[in-house]
Image (cartoon, rainbow, N blue to C red; front, side, top):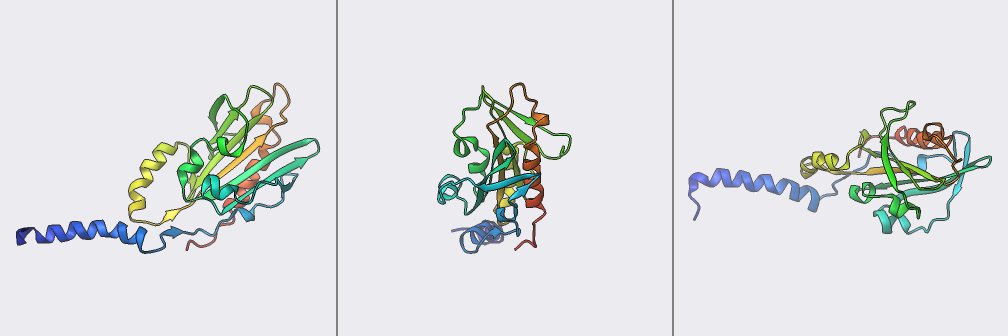
Length: 206
């Protein structure tokens, strides 16, 4: 038997462990911020979009997502593909998303900050041909540069709070001119415009 003098301590420990159990097992712990991928318009930075034709079940199968969109955006002879996915499974989005989004083989990845939006860490991926891709990860009110640090930082927080969605913005440009500079890609406009329209669509958290 446990001595009665330890009873308050034991009760406190039990109550402490029950809080995350109740939050995540007996209540709807998801935090809805009012944002949705449908807020991204069909026209961005002078490019006109059209559905890519991706299978309707793709987002659920690859990212456990019910809120995603993928479009081909075209301006003159330039065409890019923009994929935006929201999921409460953050790892599915930050762990090599290019493997699910494209069929290209990228040999180099670097994190860049562009002059027009230095607050956004952008992962830039290169192939050995005239293809490039870039993606950014948005969570809560900011952007994620180091997913491992992000996971460690939020692990404790998520024990006592609801789950929040992460958003992946992924742009694939398969028609890059030889000798291109990624800073001067016109398709950057599509990428950052999509991010701006999405983040501006926030409603009151639910």
